[in-house]
Image (cartoon, rainbow, N blue to C red; front, side):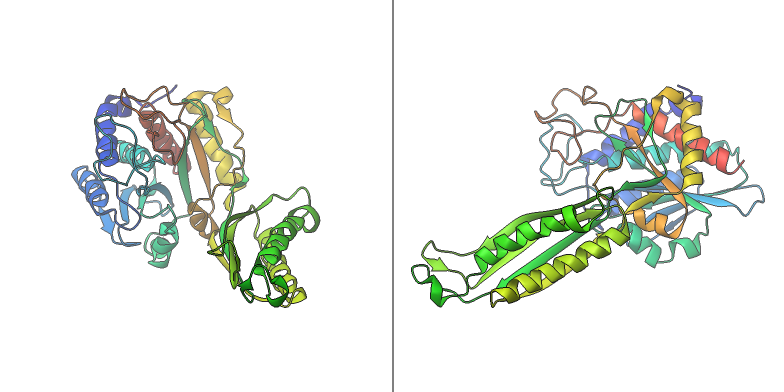
Length: 394
């Protein structure tokens, strides 16, 4: 590996910062301590900062020479509402909150890169270091954009990175096109007429209508969508009734829809609404259909993905740069890629063998209470950021 010497020399310092962030997790839009820590570190390294975008966001600005070219590097800062099962020294000190997705490591890697870039300015242009709040369901990227991120800090491209458990440490993955799915929620409330379960003919029972609806939703995937297009409809909640001898007045369905394109998403939403309304109408019932679009699909630009891949190959060798298999997970960095070209890559987090004594019994996977970020990635991830800047702003 061609890890930058000065970053390797500071790896213990960056690891201590990472563990400090891990021990003090903060949920979406509550990242006040984390934002203070980031701001203090950047300021100590002589990097001007701007605070407040998206509520708790921090942007560091590193300029060199006279070029007006610029790029953004983004790291997320928020934790999850999970009770940590790890008991090692840097385990969460905030009950019910945990860095179970590695955002502590993402923040630390970008700080490691920031320190080197501030001290060794081998580039011509401007680097914007974007420390973003509320990736976990809050749409912090969207909120930073609404607050003027790209107007205040004009840039030609933006890049992001996420650790990926199960992928060997020392590997990267990046590909052009869709790499993460859109995230959407739906809620169907079926209104019938309740009554005695022994007299079903006097009722309008919403339960069998809901069962028909669940089955019919899957025909959208198998008969309305092209087989080569990816899409998932999952009904994950069904709520109805309070007693075994009572036909309920109403039944509620909720779930999620994931796609890689907005065209498929539009079709699924339209067909789900039609199925819900017409299935109810056929049985003499009514319904309300709600569809909430959370995050759009994360789509890497061709040129930026290729540049990222070349940087990775220089760092770890071509055999360690993998094809980025698309996942149905979602990521609000998608909002930034809707506004600017860029690429979102994965860095291998290993299989969990790196965890300290005292880790939980569960697997080292994302959103698991036994997860911990692999500190061996910190110098590698920081070196990637630096080399990407130097290539982009050469």
